[in-house]
Image (tube, rainbow, N blue to C red; front, side, top):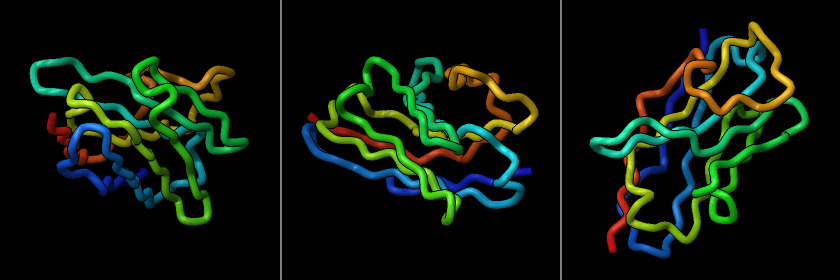
Length: 128
């Protein structure tokens, strides 16, 4: 089992920045990937970014490319999402996710169904 706790959300003006953190505990050495997803009111959950635990390969959604940066500190079992140039459409509940470690994928998974563990989420609100 892996427990995930997000932090760092808040209210920010458009154009501002936030840094989200996701602290993992439990069997953290077993998973291969960590990811961020988000869900806005009335919308489906969508992929934001993910990182491979070993090697640090990353992948981003089109909306996140160039503005967001995912990183990880394996020693601290923490994944970060640095969000710059925030827009009102970035307003959502941001979730951290980790895979189960049962399967290695050549390409970093972007589908939520491939992630076994989820945090409770941290709210990001961007005002115009």
